[in-house]
Image (tube, rainbow, N blue to C red):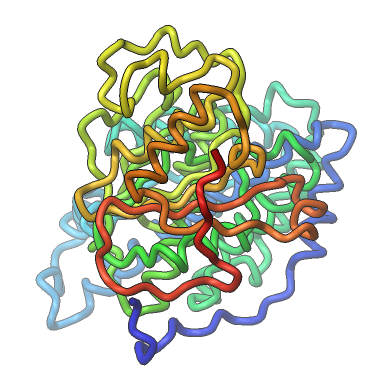
Length: 424
């Protein structure tokens, strides 16, 4: 159980920007489809984050030239230049050294130019090259999307000018987690705009918090095989920090089927300065982490996937509880997600998964067999049914299953959590 007497994280500064942000998004209407807002706005936000971190580190190095305690004190001018251009001096602080054309200052200075869309895309290309040089898995996080868009130079300038305001600067508001809050705000708003199609990258915050509060991921490997935009990972980090933990004590592993959503996830995690290993692929048919055993598994997989082609699984797939024909059904993949999660738990691992209510009563042979096996083997610890109000506001008529390989310690229960008898 998490320590209750651990000092909480510092409160965030109360900066009111929500209405302003949504009004800015509305300005894009007509030129960009609502389900594409996030691609433009969050990419700019990500660039600004990297740029501010670069400027902070650069200033630190410049000040070190005048600090008698520094190894760089009073060095020659040409040596100062070498230090400021040394990639390792930035990498040691997990910062990326950016050329001027890729900095926010440069875009702000040129925001009113007719070719601002070209300049933004060039900045994206430069940054993507820098990211992929540090880690090949970061390739494609930023795509040059502005030139080919219907956005006018005036609209692009409006976005740049908006994010240039002091209230959106993490340098001027170091305790407010500006980028993380803006990112989460837009993710939530875009999910509302997209309606039911938003499930591929967004899970309501209340649901994510419930999962994390019950699992208490303070140390170890955290996995999400339908990671969307990375909300489960970010909430785990928040829980860790609120209880005095160290983010270096957790390792993050994820898989996502959609390339665009995976880019959002990578940006989200990079915004939080987290190290991670998230891969592209269908987790059911292309398990990219076949040997990984996680201490915590959190997931809100797509519900009720039909025609998911279980025939493509090998007969001896290690995730299956038994014979493929007995423990799968082509009409629904819900219970394959359960088997996959269980396979990836460590000996003392714990998992929480959001699932459609109908999965608890389905009579389909393959699903029923898995459910009976899980109950008989004592895998399911509890089921939490989501309230009707949540169904109406999020479009997710769901329950939450919590299960663990081996009881680790007495656990506190979330409100209304209860044991359920098997529904055969």
